[in-house]
Image (cartoon, rainbow, N blue to C red; front, top):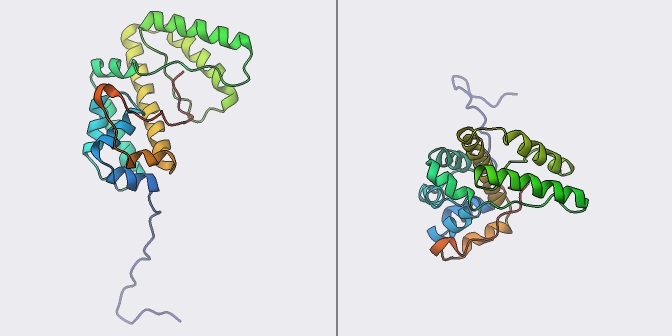
Length: 202
């Protein structure tokens, strides 16, 4: 038997939104310096970090990531170049043969000689055993870019890296504990270690 009364329209069933990650609540409530310091571990641009921290609170992770993307798109060429100086090349992964280290070092050196900063690439969705091939292929392909063209590519990879790191930071309660600690931002010091994420600079 229907529970609806005659003449009344049934209200649509309310769907419950999933609870936001615990890290998001901590991030929203964190002191500005702690939030900025954690953000700088995702992207070494002070203006990017401050803009995201200043527009808190965020209702959900999607809103935070959208704000991170928008802030990244608004960075100037000089700010992107400064953020890229905070990226460091990583090795080919545990258990890789010596030849892999040699090939990767040579590729990184050639790239940095051409463009003046570390090679960055987002490896979201790439299986760990394919990272080395993906990186080497990316470097060799992008070495053929003109400087202006590569700046655009590197800026987009940096944005994707920052987005992946931020998502991992917010979604991991142990890492998100940094939001409860005040840190010193002078000279970009006091930043927590970069969150472990499949999105890595190499």
